[in-house]
Length: 369
Ligand code: SAH
Image 1 (cartoon, protein in one colour):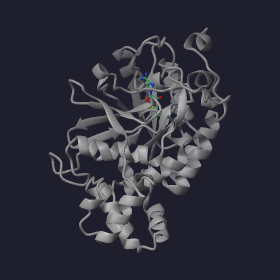
Image 2 (tube, helix red, strand yellow):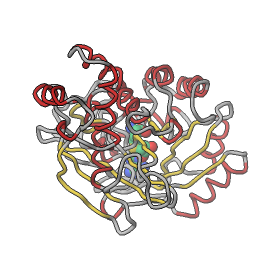
Image 3 (spheres, helix red, strand yellow):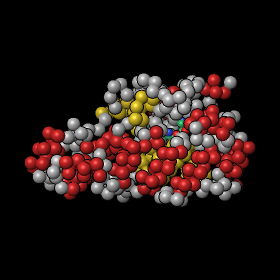
Image 4 (cartoon, helix red, strand yellow):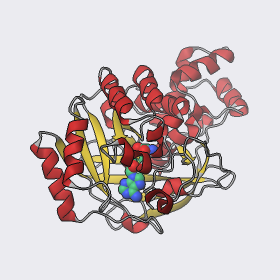
């Protein structure tokens, strides 16, 4: 039975047309599902009664089930959602003055095995479906008691921004992610602005090009090192798509992007990638790519093998980038008390070890010995 959360508007048009129904019916159902957060066909009062009965027989609207709900002292909220067969993914809501950001997962686990990330240590099970990705936004609004497009505390939406920065590598699941992005942007659904939806990638170059063609939104790239030798060890996908190719892909992306810069994320690892020389090398590397830097203090997790750079080191590093004219922000660590901070999302992954040979299993000790 099809789950209508899996469909973007074009897919819903196609499905309704197979039923012999007009396109406006698809738009009605889209609105009910996403703008009203409705999962009950009977409640769709402007849909003809006979059609409602058919829909009930032939389709469902099913988001993942909630397994756990944790509230951090700083207001960050983390949910664990069941995606079946022993797998669960995490979604994080980060309320801030004037905006609410939802951090969404795209895979159960992750195959990329970045050396400093807890998700990578869990192994990889599978891609999330479009419905499971969109379902996180659908459920977040419901759990926050918010109308998806309604008014929040300060006049805006409760969830005003979405970042695909949860578990998984979004661009390794580009088909389902693009369909989910289209639902997030669709005026019959969430109507989010392209500038307020961000895909974060470790740098899968061909998929950056596909995103640019199919659904350009704001782009964040996890850089983490200024040279290939170090990046090969920290972000192993670099062995396949080295920095020169990645920088070129960023430049191509900007031709279509809704923002005129790429955000480079940079995790600050004590004694590994945080020296003055690294900062200067970053300035040289990114000279031809309009960009902002987002420095992320490393968030520890058990047996990570890394430590967070001291605050003074982060300030000095940021200062060197700023002096060269680059805009730099340092990410405030939120939700650390409920393990909701960047790189701490572990969820529940039944690793069937569907790892690919592009990212051989390596422990931090192997990499840095
Ligand atoms: N697969 C995506 C999303 C990863 S999570 C990507 O690679 O971009 C979002 C960001 O948090 C990435 O920049 C990621 O490298 C970073 N990150 C991962 N583990 C971290 C940790 N332990 N502390 C701080 N940041 C971390």
